[in-house]
Length: 355
View 1 (cartoon, rainbow, N blue to C red):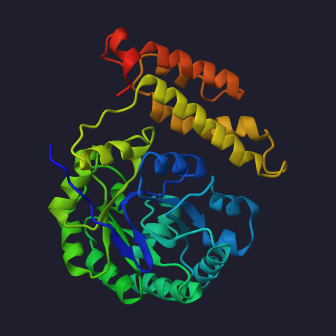
View 2 (cartoon, rainbow, N blue to C red):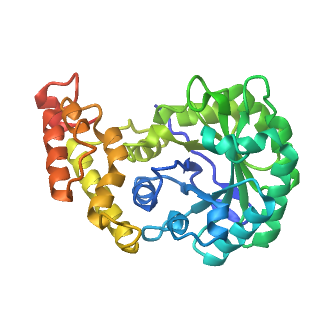
């Protein structure tokens, strides 16, 4: 294994030393998970997508999507919507907070309830509007933050227009493009089209960060070699394994990725829950009818599915995840699953490593 160094990239005034990004993922990438990934070696992170309309209307719940845990940097805030004026107003509010390093426009969310109303991936069907959003957002932040766009190669296989859409946002002033190599219609299924990502990279002058089809630490560097992208963004592959970012650093240094021990999995889950409880404790009682602790346990549920699904007794825990239990009870159940060991490994081996 030979060392492979990723080069720093410049996104407007922002220099990203290690261009391996955690993708924005609704329901997952809050401050608790983002901060764990940064500590494991992730180069930059992005919030869950935040409704521009919600920010403009000062919805309390929407505002919490911008909550951070500790000092998270580099950190981008991602907004979604299809009204250029609302997107610009939301961008100005985010810039005024002075806690984010860049602002990302969501033009790639494939969820039907988002894309079918023209938001997210729906913007790919109207390249002129997407470009206008970028122009107005750039003007609204007035140089305080670089503006990026996260998008896909097209709406469906019959309307792959990524060269047009990315040309438009580049001309409108976008400082970088995050490009997922699948069409919106397939969401996350099937292979990602790295050839088309490479074509976009050749056509654009601003940095292009590839997304989609990465399954291992080695794939990060394979994508860079095969497509020429300036960086790589990891999405679902990072869920339940923030130490993947450590593995990527190890691979770059010529060291074999080692994966986590069972104890590391246990401590990561416990720390993740602690951070969720701290984040929830900041919210008002009206918003948290169940209280901070129970709400944090519920927020952790989709992460537990990812952390533990390869263990023998995960099924027993999965059947209880809908129950409302306190932190101590939930962690006892987690410990029981971890003690069962990984599927396909002898109990002796599984005690030593969860990889």
